[in-house]
Image (tube, rainbow, N blue to C red):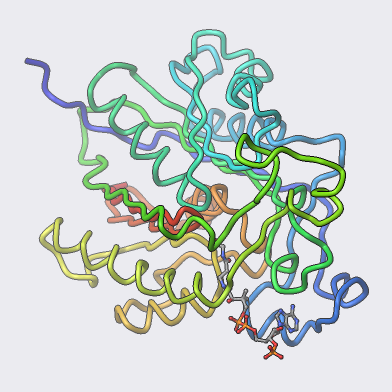
Length: 330
Ligand code: UT7
C-alpha cells in the first residue's frame, strides 16, 4: 500500500485588476456613505476588472506568479483546480481556459463551485490528489469577477464585492515538516435562498424581464448570513484546534474568508485570537468570494507573516450554505 505524501505549498501568487472603486463612487449611485460602509463592513475600496478581462485572465496571472515563486514552469503542472462562482462560461470549465492561457498542456483541469467556501473545498481536493500521489503537484486557484454579478441598484450588496484571484502550488514533499494536516467541509442546503443568483441556470432561465428585475445578480439576506458566518467561523476554529490537539494559541496565522471586518473581529474576540495573527485585506479588496483566502495567503507570505513551520488555518463560509476549513504546517 502506498503511504500518503506530505504536501507542501511550493509557491503563492495573486492578482487584482488596477481599477479601484472607492466608497465615494457608491455614494453617487446608491443611498449610502463612506462612513456607513466602513463602519458596517470595513471595506474602503475594491477592484473592478475591465470588460476585456474575464475570470480566467485573473486566474492565469495569479497562477503565473505562484509558479514563479515556486520556481516551476506551466509545463510542470499536473492538475489545475479552479474555485469560482463567476465562470467565464457555463461550459466548458474555466480551468481549461487557465490551462490554455498558461500553456500548461500536461495539466488536468477542473472547476469547483462552492461560493465563498470554494477555495477551502478546492484546497482540500488538491491536498487529497497530491497526498494520494495521483499527481505530484496541483495548482489551486480562486478567481472571481463578482462585479459582473453585483446589483448596482441594491445598496446592501453592491458595496461589498470586488474582483481578484489568488493561487497556491501544492507539491508532494516528503522531506521537511510542511504538510496539510486537517480539513473540514460542510454544507446545509436548507439555506440555499440566503445568498442566491436566482436566474441564469437550469432552474430559472434568463429572460429580458428577469434581467430587468436583476435576477441575474446576487441577492442576499445579509443579517442571516452575518449570524451564520460568526457562528461557523468560531465552530470551525474550535473543531480544527481540537482535531489537531492544540489550543487557539498555537495558531500562527489565521486566514478567514474576507466577509466583513466586524464578523472577523467578533469571531477573533470570541476565540481570543489577537488580530495581529489574522490576515485581513477586506479594507482594500472587499469580499472576493473564493479568491479572498488565496489572495490573503499570498499577501501574508510576501509580508513575512506566514513562514515555514507556522501553523496556518483558513476558514470560509458562504452561499449554499457552505463552510469549511483547512489547517496546514507551512
Ligand atoms: O461571503 C458571504 C457573503 N455575505 C456577506 O458578505 C454578507 C454578510 N453580512 C453583512 O456583511 C452585513 O449584514 C451587511 C454589511 C450586508 C449589512 O450590515 P448590517 O449591519 O447587517 O445591516 P442591516 O442589513 O441590518 O441593515 C441596517 C440598515 C437598514 O436600514 P433600516 O431598515 O434600519 O432603515 C438597511 O437598509 O442599514 C441599511 N443599509 C444601508 N445604509 C447605508 C443597508 N445597506 C446600506 C448601505 N448604506 N450600503
